[in-house]
Length: 376
Image (tube, rainbow, N blue to C red):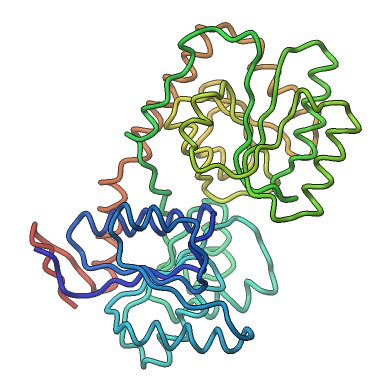
């Protein structure tokens, strides 16, 4: 029995991105529980449209036409025109739009906003997190950001809650690691080619290891929309004569194929939220090298399922990769097994769903029983 109350999930776009995919994953999960959901994007990109169609999600979008103020008006108008009973929004700009829409509707619907990064912007945060008081709840996928909100914005302390990402554990169990030995260690990066991802230091680390005689290659997978940074990366690769060692492959739609050809995943960002890429690698049983920041410490245990490094020091990054290269095949397999165990403990969709039910209850939007009857 599908409940008729509407849950509207709002995102900036369905273009490639971790937050965008997480919102669609949440929509899929809630719909699988017979809840009446709809996805609204505030732009008309279509990267994840096949996913939406595959899972038969109700979807609409706001066109990109006009200036910022015109698009804002259309977005607010469209949210309220949907007559939702509950809105869940991802990312600051989108959540601001949802807050404005709620205020203009005379607070007719409940609102859960979601913060998806550990990045701190003190002056903007002062504005945004005070505005967030107009929401019913705020979910945060960054442990350090949650601590920051609780300490700097105490009025939000009872509204903010940590929520891990949704990852399809069964999907990534299809990845088979170490079925045959490889003479070349296949290292992979997946993500945007942009400054915060620290790819220049990754390239420098690979060069240092090649100079030491290690047989490795690095595959870069991700959108290169930041043309100037992509140019910096390719220029450095050329200057260090690494064209036969490092390859930029652009964005991929077949991440399983990428992980099936990966021995070690590197994500060494200067800052990161709850990383989809690290989460997927852990589910796939792939050892990881990650920045030693609080978000990653939740997922990576030093020497157990990967290694943590200083993202500001390419020599530290090279040392972390070298620690993995020196492991025996058996030790690498132990890391793979540890990752799969971690995945089962953290990425249980039923646990995530129950966490959302708890949030719903706390804001007066409760679901009970197999028929998912909702009471306000």
